[in-house]
Amino acid sequence: MKKWKQKAIVQKAISFLPFSSKINYIFQKYVTKGVNLSDEYFYDRLGHAKEHIKGFKKHIKLTPKTCLEIGTGWYPIVPISFFLIGADIIYSVDISFLTSKKRLKTTLEMFVKANEKGQLIEYIDIIPEKYNNIISLLNNYDKYSLKEVLQNLNIVYLIEDAENLSLTDNSIDLVNSNNTFEHIYPNTLIPILKELRRIVNKQSGIMSHFIDMSDHFAHFDKSINIYNFLQYNDKQWKWIDNSIQPQSRSRFSDYKEIYSKLNIPISEESYRDGNIDELKSIKLAEKYIGNSIVETAISHCHLISVMSQIDN
Ligand SMILES: C[S@@+](CC[C@H](N)C(=O)[O-])C[C@H]1O[C@@H](n2cnc3c(N)ncnc32)[C@H](O)[C@@H]1O
Image 1: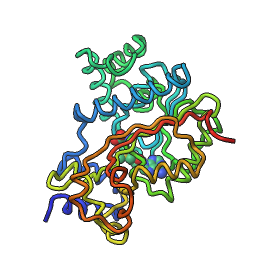
Image 2: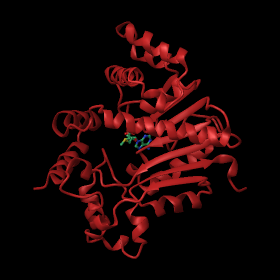
Image 3: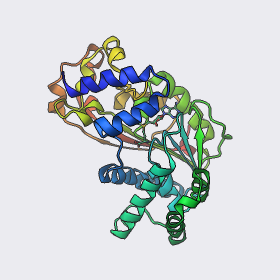
Image 4: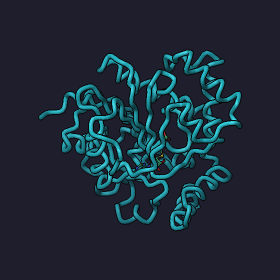
């Protein structure tokens, strides 16, 4: 049996257990080795932080003071980047509390390593005083509780469903997400986007979302390509998919349609073309036939919404 199918079966079984996200972390750490903070992952998400900040500065001409990331996951690379450029308050929203004091330390150490190699500055304009705060935190790390570490980084963890946030209207300058929307099916993504539209500052705020539309099983099993999951119809996919790392399989055009229906502007879009030959090697399920092959092949995208451009 192919490796990805074995993983799908194990994750499906884990998804029925209590504490499924913790058990999945252990499974991924020791079996699939998918949760260690690699250089590749760190610099990829640092690249996302760079693009979020660049988008904000381009359209709003300032540094964001209040930021929010939906679905931060295990390593808060993007929130720490916002701290380093001078954000006053950074909300990190997730339905599960996935970080830990140890994982936070690992993340902070990666920032220090990147700075010592002279690479951090290529991504973000760090404020020296904020960087020194990180150094002194690390020097005395054991003395602080997790809560104190987060306070020192201006990070507020909200363990909430993004569909229903405890934040006031127009309160956030920069709302962002990283490789999260692809894990949320449209029937949930629509209310989430409405909620994000409510909390983002409509005069001087932006939303900036990175979406990875590739089959995530292909990241682990190189014998399949990133379009493998498009061969299954919805009924078959329901059996394969699991609730700990669901994959909606939505394509670029689906996200654009949702934005349009919700009257959320797409002020800037960028994407990776993908590989049409690889897509053509897959016998597509009926729901994907008839769509533009070029659009279906798009594997990753970044959507920026300047909220002052909303049509009234
Ligand atoms: C694959 S992870 C992405 C982690 C990280 N942002 C990254 O760049 O790798 C998706 C995250 O979204 C969170 N999530 C999914 N649905 C959510 C919801 N309705 N509200 C808040 N967080 C959610 C999950 O718990 C998970 O941590």
